[in-house]
Amino acid sequence: MTLTRFLPAAIAALMIAQPAAADEAQKLITILTAPEPQTQLMAMVLTMNAVAAGAEARILLCGPAGDIALKEAPDTATAGQPPKGASPQGLMKMLMEKNGVQVEVCAIYLPGKGADASVLMDGVTAAAPDAMGAAIVAEDTQVMSF
Image 1 (cartoon, rainbow, N blue to C red):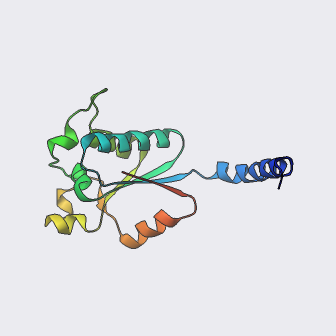
Image 2: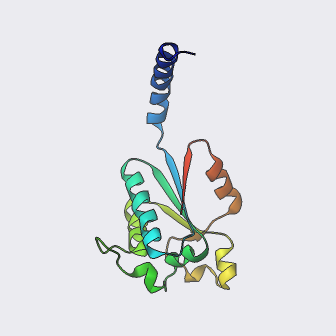
Image 3: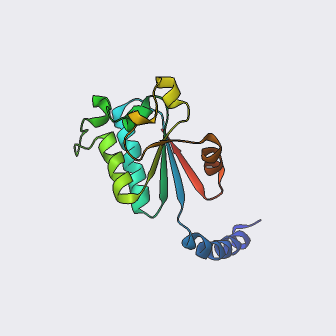
């Protein structure tokens, strides 16, 4: 197919698809497993910017990143990072409180720590694997993984 035939068809398809996309917010699931505070913070920064751009976001914390959600979080989760002094946990709390972002730990996180939900910050829950799996593969969902 030549470009002159393809371009008008592509433009028409985009124009038709655009109104449907405008009706629903894009969904974003941020999956964070990285132990490094800088990576954790960047995941929160990008999620925050996606929310500011209109996305409905959810955060799934697994492995060492689950520690961000602890009431007694390690210093790496609460210490400010350059350049603005924000911490991974602080930015996550802001996303939860100001933007209604749902934060969950992997279903195996708490059993792996030998703990129960009482160690988690208020508002953080354990993810249901079936519901999270369905959300990840939903057609209108983007997944960002760190």
